[in-house]
Image 1 (tube, chains in turn green, yellow):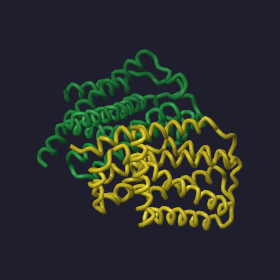
Image 2: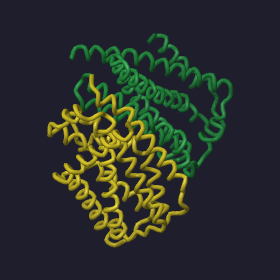
Image 3: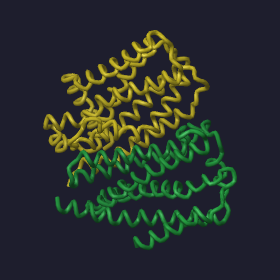
Length: 210
Length: 223
């Protein structure tokens, strides 16, 4: 699977750099979007997976579900950092500032805080069912922020949108761009799935050794 | 059944209050933290005025971190004293959670109503919309109590406690914290009061309390 994903990644990188035309108003800066959008998508998916596996642990008390929840959060943390950094660079290039608390920046930052808090909690407790239970409860409790991030944050920060680039009708993309973006989404989601499987297995082995 | 639950909640609340009055550690830590921080802000200002938005943010930062100094002890103190197991034997999850949540709410409400007038006096801030300000304090502390009680139970078994509670609390409480700052700024004269935010805060407080209630059972009843 790793080889297929590696090949697909190379093809997408080639398409982004040599085939995809510059976007209107953004020029070649649009290349960042082909990296930024998929990693941000996976950062959110990882949050859902972590909460779902947390709920599964609370129902079945199986440490495998806890390992999957932790693996999703660990990967989610890496992806959310990548999304934050690439978003900040995109923001600097298009809006002139790395950070201006745009609703999406705020959302991704809250997600970063949640992942950080979840991993800090796990780090502060000895391995076992007590940690698994606490982590699952936190994962689900922090999931309650989702309606706030989706519905309320845009109302709080609506005035901080200097440009409709990301908040209007979206990026003006032709069919080729859209196809490459969808391929990038599939590729990065696949990378997450592959890494998640490996990391969950590793965490399970670690747990069994303890 | 409902009345017996309420009786049990009341018993837990009275127990918390009695123990809190006897040892006063949580009260002293919170009030002294709030007072010290406020004194620092006031000293730094040297009588100079503050923008309403900055005033509101400072006030809520003081309330947030002061509450962190006391609200995290609600289960940890029981664990240290060795009474947590007894409480588990005699108390059901829901009466314990709601009793402790009610007590934390009471504690934070007293803290807020202690620090807010002092803040206004020492920073020279004026509350133009007093009613909105009071309601915001009420709803803000309710949210802090709802999330704080569950997270306090969560961190009981942690080996490293220092700072953990605040780290866990901030992302969860942001939906209450941010509208509270906006409303307080408006109450201090930073523009029109976004009244709908009060409804949003109340709704999120209820979501946090319900979420805590559902999830607390998993923490309380171990295998």
